[in-house]
Length: 179
Image (tube, rainbow, N blue to C red; front, side):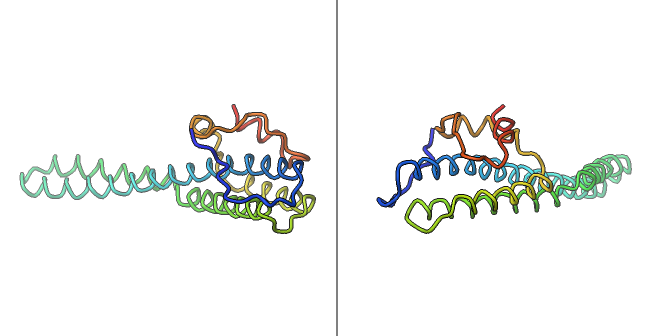
């Protein structure tokens, strides 16, 4: 299991309580970042799979039908390719890909901000919480659910389950992701 806290420097002027708060926020948003990144990759794979499979079946059907001069082979294989391409278009993963990418890049920026705060940059806790409430609400409303990757996250990273966030923007979100 990997440790998500591979910081090369923590500022000595920060108090232990500030460090704990920043690390708890980091745990929370690292999980969201990782889950949305996996969500993005899975939708990207799904889109590529349907596109490549549909094009391949149509090409194979055309070649096989031309070689054998059998219209049944041409119709069956091309028909299967058109059906696969149609399913891919109906699922329309492009919007999900875009929104998942926006979500994970936004959370990646949050992680950079938290690491910078641990290294000594200015950080206002209340301003951060207010901004994160707004960001979390927008992402929750516009992106596909990434809960299915939470179990994989637990297996990959060694993070305590009970990270207590002070004035957590969405306490129920953390509980839903851990199931």
